[in-house]
Amino acid sequence: MDFNLTEERQMLQDSLRRYLTDRYDTNVRNEILDSETGMSDRIWAELAELGVIGALFTEEQGGFGGKGFDIAVVFEELGRAGVVEPLLDTAILGGGLLARLGDDDQRALVEEVIGGSLHLALAHGEPAARFDLSRVETTAKADGEAILLNGRKAVVVNAEAAGYLIVSARESGGAFDRDGISLFLVPADAQGVTLRGYPMMSGGRAAEVTLDNVSVSSSARLGASGKGYSALEDVIGAANVALAAETMGAMQSATELTRDYLMTRKQFGRPIGTFQALAHRFSDLLIELEQARSAVINAAGHLESSDRDRQIAAARNLISRVGRLVAEESIQMHGGIAMTQEYELAHIAKRIVMADHRFGDADYHLERFIELGAA
Image 1: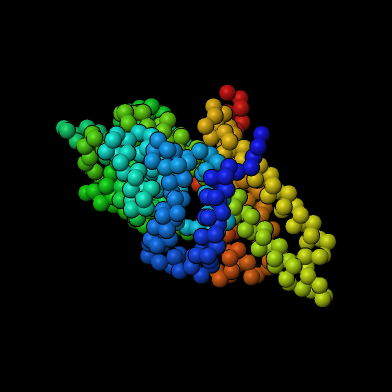
Image 2: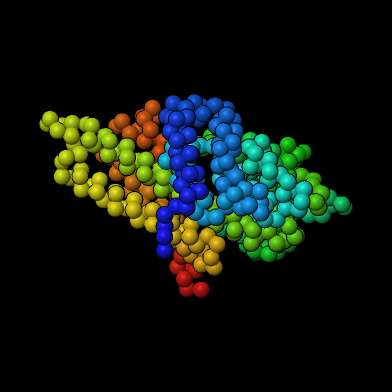
């Protein structure tokens, strides 16, 4: 099998890398992190103009990519540069659900997403759910011609910037049942929606969302009643590939920064990278990084296959374990400078570590891999 990028993907990678190298440095990111919105509207608009958002959708959905390797190419570069803009949440999660389940009017919003004029947020996780995708206690009950939504959603990334929230709610079944989960397109400023926002450790912002008798029409439902779980699985699978690729890109940056530091910092008149103990530790990082790259390629290649979930679980488990090793070793080999906000590694290391806490940590994905293998 040929793992080289196609000409179109190579061009996408090259143009995105050049853009981020020119426009996205540590000072720019720190200014964005200190802002009220936690993102840059200018950067977002320029990414859309470059076609980066369109690369995350298929031609049928209005884009020009949308496959596993398209997602991996984009998010690897975003991870390398430490980009905090919410492409995963608006495009992969929100846009992915609209494209899969929406009617003609709802799918028309995908054009606005690709054009950069609309943000979305998936309000699915709940305070007691942990990583269980099917655990939904938020309710959707008929009230005449309307549907009333009640419940709480936790760590809804990009909720404050979103024009719409895609809310999961249960129309039937028990708290852990896969059947009975519906998805609703809810304006973020709808009456009864309350957001409590906060900055995240890895960059960007999230919010705790409370739904108190939020009234929507049945036309706000995405797809059939109670049949939203399968689409959720699809977009979370794509999001896991994106997150794995992003983390791998961040690990590349961490090892490059460490290599440069080891060959610049001197002791006893020679670079510390020439000392055998540090050279061996750094060599181990490079070996682990290549394993991580193979895992991302494998997950991206299986995104449209029947074995998708098992391969993604394997990749996320490996990425989580290797990511923690790379973050810890990079910081230790740098010393105190690695912990300063003005130095690039400080943010990169946070991103690597915090990626392990989204869509399942290393232990969760190991258990999932074993469970799927035994099925």
